[in-house]
Length: 323
Image (cartoon, rainbow, N blue to C red; front, top):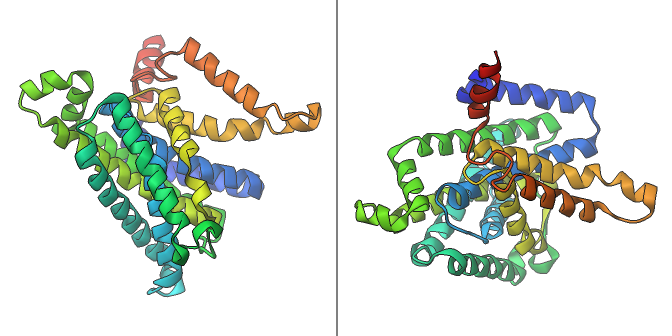
């Protein structure tokens, strides 16, 4: 459990996992692992808005698209470092991608976060579609043809290490925020917005701050996705991508960071693990079984796999008590 609270130990543990996948598995499994890392980052960032702040955003794919296209364009047009320092350049581009998405999140969040519930979901959904349609009509970014030739990190271990750094930055940043006075403000908005306002909390400001921070890490997730796939197109960031992120948050538990991580890994791996069934049966039953599995989890665990708990809470509740 010390690694859970220490960023350096967590990074070393993740790099060790990366070496295992680097030498023990083929490139197909390695790509699935990288996609799982992107989904973990996407789910954790959305959990800040949907889980901790109690809002309902359906436009996360739009912020991811902004980050992906920014880093795609920057990494192909603005090379200013030698090859040996390309890793630093990619890190700076990822920060830029996050900042661009954060600005978009601020512009969208400031007027729309005065809304609640279904109205907010519709506004954020519309924003995501506006971004996608805009990208379709931007020829210098490839338009409907997409943007190709995006440089990669090279080997799997470099890609996974880069993703691990951002996963830890996202996790511990949100963790620290939620254990600060700002985090208490986010939780107060979720629990009772009227009571929070009566206590002097500017609920709109709190929601905008959560939205901006969430958008930043969604933009970084888009940057990682662009470098891992080496090709992006507007069809990669449709409404279904936003729904997929919402499913991860709900399945893992609204307000649980480790729940979002576990759910993101399961949702990424499960359809691929079921792929051999098509060869055995001759029918693609993956989505049927995948959907049934989600329904069963929601019936058996209505608050998600972890609920509002973290893995450290479960450790203290079950492991220490039994010992």
